[in-house]
Length: 151
Image 1 (cartoon, one colour):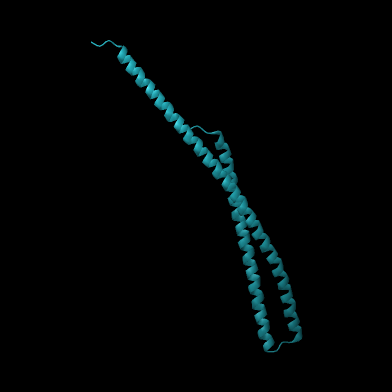
Image 2: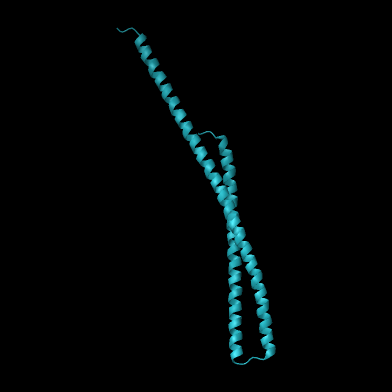
C-alpha cells in the first residue's frame, strides 16, 4: 500500500475547492441562462405588444386605448432595462466564477503534477534500493561460495 505524501493533503484540499468552484459555476451558469431567457421573453413580449399596437393603429384606435398601450410599453421598457441589468450582472458573476474555477483547477493540476513527480522519484529510489539489495545478496552468495572449500 503506497504511503500518503504530505502533498496529498494539499491536493485533496485543492480538489475539494475545485469541486466546490465547479458546483458554484454550474449555479452561476443556470442563473445566467435564466436571466437571459427572461430578458428574451420580455423582448419578445414587447415586440408582440408593439406589433399589436401597430395593427390596431392602422384600423383606427381611440386615444385612451392608445395611451394605455403606450403606458404599458413604457412599463415593459422599464422591466426590460432592469432585466438587462440583471442579465449583465449574471454574466459578470459567471465570468468571475469561471475564472475562480480555472484558478482552482490550475492549482489542483500543479499539485497533481508535483505529487506524480514525487511518486516517480520514490519509485526510482525504491528500484535503486532493490537493485542494491539484490547486488549485495548476490555478492554475499558469491563470497559464501568462494569461501567454501571445493571438494
